[in-house]
Length: 114
Length: 110
Image (cartoon, chains in turn blue, yellow):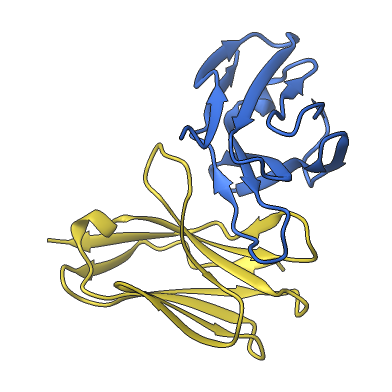
């Protein structure tokens, strides 16, 4: 019962490189989300997806790309990493039913852009 | 004005006391409210959800919601040192993602 996993857990990359953060959930949840967490800003939404092949931007989507070809996976790509994208990235998911809007988080990926 | 506001703290309480954490939100149409606990270096962990006005109790935790005042709170009874963490208030607006407050850091002194 893995729940929601993220990989890698830690990543150091250089400015200008492309990097992809992976997120996988085993609950068959419809909704998946990407947040970043920075000191002084709390958790901010990058992108979310309501189902496979349906994605939408959050408040801080510039410089990020997502895809969702399978329900269980929701990768986040930084097309050309910048130092301002140094952050902790959390993936989350929730069921699509109206009975519960409870959202569950993965363990996070700590990304450093040098 | 931030959509979800919390006092950053730290809120310091002695072991065994009641800790009271507060949150206000700006969108009057919000319908679902959540409290998450986050230990340093860890991911947010859901501890309470509340959808209706009034109180909801789960063990030592009680969530309180007042939609007229746009206010949600979390009470932790018999506080333990292991409760020391940052508590995040989150609000669901529409049917999309949660909007989070910046969190309140709670310190329970042994």
